[in-house]
Amino acid sequence: MSIGEAPAGARDLAGLTVGQVSEQTRIRQGIIRDIEGDNFSACGGDFYARGHIRSIARAVGTDPGPLIEEYDSAHRPPGPEAPEDAAPARRRHRMRWW
Image (tube, rainbow, N blue to C red; front, top):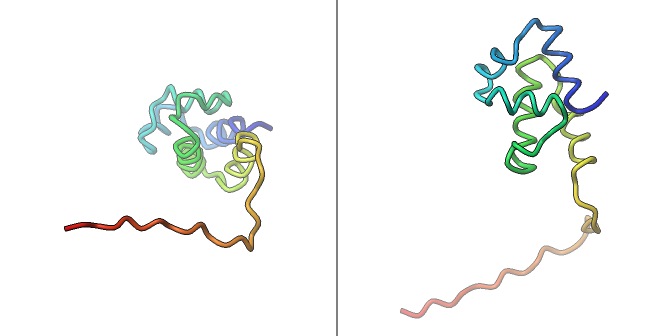
């Protein structure tokens, strides 16, 4: 089952329309339809997509955790992960002259 199919199925089981979910979450109906079709381009980035998934899942009575994890694994850009014991980067402090 895809990321969008889970909340869509839960919405149907709850007897809710896209309009009702939109009213509860304040997310536009078009974005909800896109998410249910696994199209996240209208969300405005990963931060907003995760928030929309979380809000929609809660509105339809589904646990958002697994959906967020699945979204992250499918949409996280490839690259090296920072080691857990790595020291934090040092901040440069700007000197103020006054």
